[in-house]
Length: 268
Image 1 (cartoon, helix red, strand yellow):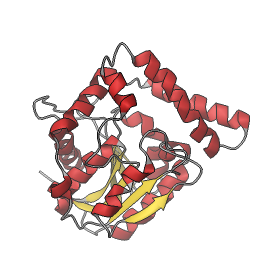
Image 2 (cartoon, rainbow, N blue to C red):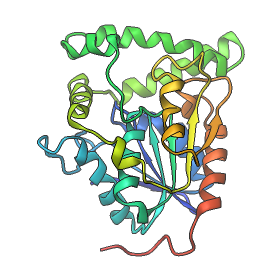
Image 3 (cartoon, rainbow, N blue to C red):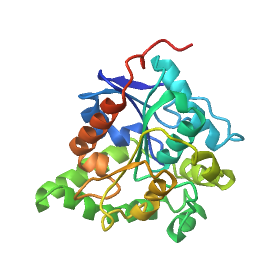
C-alpha cells in the first residue's frame, strides 16, 4: 500500500473522506507535517492506493487499512484523524484497536447512525450518469470558501485552487456510491460506546456546513461525554483545507498533549 509519510514529531494518521483521495486534503497534510509526523493514504479501493480491498468485507477493509498503514510506517500508536466518512472509519478503528490510538480526532464526521439524505439517495440511483450534476452541485460549497477567504477575488482564487486540486485527483462516483452502500450493514453504536481514548470533535460553523450537518457530528460528543469540542470559525465542511493552519495548530496541540514516548517503533 502506498502511504504518505511526512514531517516529524507526534505521529498523526489522517483518513480521507468518501471521495477517497488523500490529495484532496493536501493543504492540511502540508501544514500539519510542519508540526507533526503525518501518515496518510487514499482509501483501499482507490487504484492509486495499491491497498488490499475485498468488496465482500466492505467497510471493514477501510478500518483494517489503518492497521496496515501504521505497520508500514512503523507506528505502534498515533493520534488518528478521520475526515467526514473517514471519521467513522477512525472511530471504528479506535474501538477495535484502542491500544494503538493515543487520541482520536473526528473532523465533520458522519455518526454511526448516519443514513443518506434525499440528495445522496438521488445520486445513488445512477452515480456515474449523474456525476455532472454532482460536480455542478459542488458550487454550493463556494459560500464557505468565500467565508474563509475575505474578499471577492481572493475567494474566487481559493475556490479555483480547491476545484483544480479536486479535478486533478478525480473522484469515482461508482466507488463513492459503493462506500455509502457499505454502511448499510454496519452497526457501530454499541461497539463505540465503551471507548475511552482522548477525543476531539472538530466541525465548522453550523450555517456553513452544507455536507454533514454539525448536529450530526456532535452525536459523537453524546456517545463520548469526555470528548473535547472545537469549531473552525468562518468555514464549514472544508475547514481543514480552507483554514489549514487553524486545523493543523489544533490537531498538533491535541496530538502533542496525548503523545507517548514510545509510539514510534518497528511493527511486524
